[in-house]
Length: 139
Image (cartoon, rainbow, N blue to C red; front, side):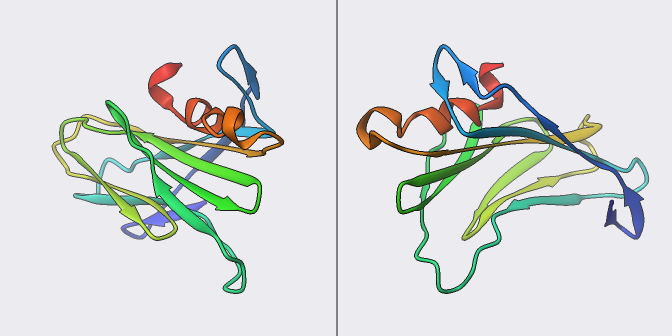
């Protein structure tokens, strides 16, 4: 549960297949955030919580219709993706994730974030895997 405008909302996390012809990842989830009908201009954020001592680097890896940010810790890469460019929405990149601002004229019932991670054995070949796995436009 979480609050938007003081109203309790549901968050649903669905485990997805982690193997596809384009990728193999350690884990993959779709996080669905329901939007309230009674609140104007909503902001929904998906972030990575880390310890300050961890040396995590980030990179923005957007694509057509895609807002995606990735984080690296040693050989582990985690990517967060969300559909971008829908009317009435704006995506913002944060230091630790993505924020989606939804105006009251957007025709949306929910926001779907995709999260995928992989501890890479061959960084040159596998670095793209989480990008494919966290891209909601490829479903």
